[in-house]
Image 1 (cartoon, helix red, strand yellow):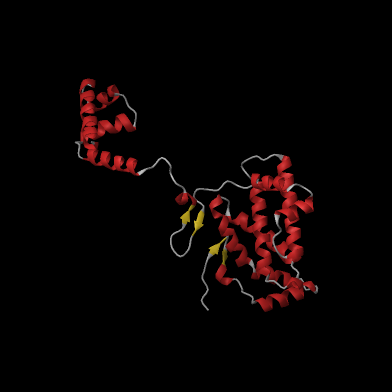
Image 2: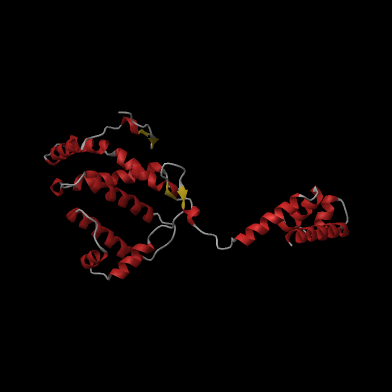
Length: 258
């Protein structure tokens, strides 16, 4: 079996052990029977999982090492609270715990200030969610959280939405097997239309056919915002000549668009 070598946070993932589901269960039985060495084995065997989840948040600008440490806290909590009686894979249980720990860290370091009351409601809901998952092994509905913490569902939804981090335009939405697709690729520019695009192409072609001095004058006037007097001093000609050349260039562009 060929292992792909990936280095992140100073760890070579090709060196990390992989445990089968049966071996994982046996290791948990040893841990829950008092064998503390089994805990370290479970941590090392699941570092690859933490690393894969950390990479989901690399677009946030956070240091990968910091997120990895936070993810490991989530992994330790998952190991300590995992119950074999529920008969689910450990990764199924651990992923939301690890991701939740990372998101909590990012929320605590949020650049946008959120009121204390909203944060309190959101954190109560998140704690209730974790406890619900531990007990039932599946995600709670909003109505479940409302019943547990005795807060209206719409207030919980508003509070959870308020602490969400703004999405980066460079966040990968779908990587697939080829080049990644970013959020900015999915946004439509309402200012762009076929007519505006054709106009741009027409103007560009017309300007490219002018001499170098005319192109320079148009660039300085309409791109750099310089006055005719400033341009005249730079080119060593009179302001009147600049005015005449500018008018001629604009007339050529206008004729080319008709």
